[in-house]
Image 1 (cartoon, rainbow, N blue to C red):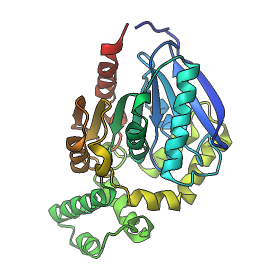
Image 2: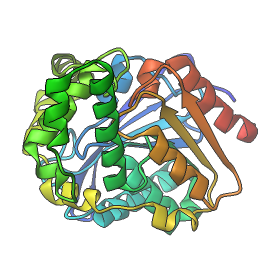
Image 3: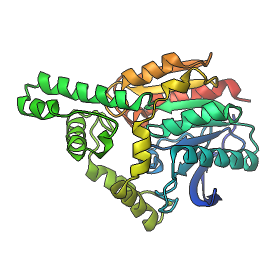
Length: 317
């Protein structure tokens, strides 16, 4: 596959379903297959982190980073529902396939974005060449129970009796996203055990520094990421906690690749594996990242890039 030595970056603003959407496109060869990246959160764009850690996918793809409504480049109005995000993404795919002269896109989704992407693969399989789930969700409430149990196990192993007493008081239900006490403990322990965003540790200060240095974003767009993080999206979080993707997994037939950090306590290995086993697709691959947490593309960049190259190689011309 041919590619230029220099990477081109193109920033676009689109109106989709009466909302503003910002996308960042990177390419060395505009004839390369299109890779659409759908971030997590809600409201947590990946472009700042892929850029900061030099995760360059442009040797094999034309890469499109989409900021979902309400964060980054895409204004302050959040989507009313997960299905609305699915429809937004579908319209974006139609735009990309038309303007970049492709029949399908490769779809890489991270964390909360895997909910959007799984529904896309289920509802619009004709648009998807391969679905790539990084930090794949399945049954969201059961995933959260697994996280809590893992944290309890770590606390027990360390002899952290005081922490264990606090953790034993927690009762998880579908409203766990509103439990500030639990969220505080969860964030503190996952960072302590380096099982949050990165297995190397990735505190709030580092995230702030990365976002503030994001290339091609305006200052307002960088600050909009912080705003979306502070304000949040209660209705999307509420819908997310009730999500069970296992209900549709058997009906998904597009080629699927799942990448999972072994140390991830945001989207657990166990839950992503259960999702994988239930998939109806005849072509499916599951990759473990032994030294990674929630962001394998940061913790094990070379392995991540190698797998992404493998996905595209059979289609090279």
